[in-house]
Image (cartoon, helix red, strand yellow):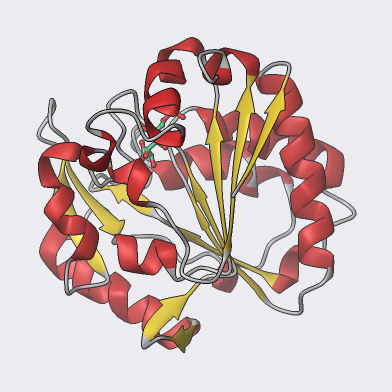
Length: 237
Ligand code: 6PG
């Protein structure tokens, strides 16, 4: 596991974008599960603005590690965020965008999306394998949409699960921990002071770290990196 600390969110975005552009060069088809929330916005802007004309986007297939069960036009939609900050600025074939149909029934959609992964991804250890899974981390230690109060979903039998946001009750479709840990590479993108306590508890295996889904990220044979800014990493020893 590697931790990379950069000055601020802008630098994290720049460094990640350069890393991603270099990583995909070594691949033919590349299957990536995107994360949602606010951190990826800047990263998608930098990716599009700096590498929009140099990355061969036709080789990249986009999925989501988790999605809110809302229409694709809703401001809460991770697809809409990606559309606004990335897809609207690059040439990517529509068939390369595998969005969660958030407007459908959550349980039925989780089953459909699990099938989308089965059809499109190689299976390793009998589990769909992403080339790269991007993750954020919530202040409560959640990742993708596996929250502490539903940590039992981490090892769920189904590869895609229906999760419930602890405050809003919003339903979400999320890949489970087995799919995350089966990836060839997992990268956390974590910035901001609000994450510092959890980053310390998780990376330094502090008291109760096992209750945080983000602490359960340990790729079976893949590479794990944390891209952070100074604010998020400031409490690390
Ligand atoms: C989501 C994300 C979620 C996110 C974290 C961090 O759909 O919200 O996938 O896991 O990555 O909540 O979000 P920020 O980057 O906004 O802090």
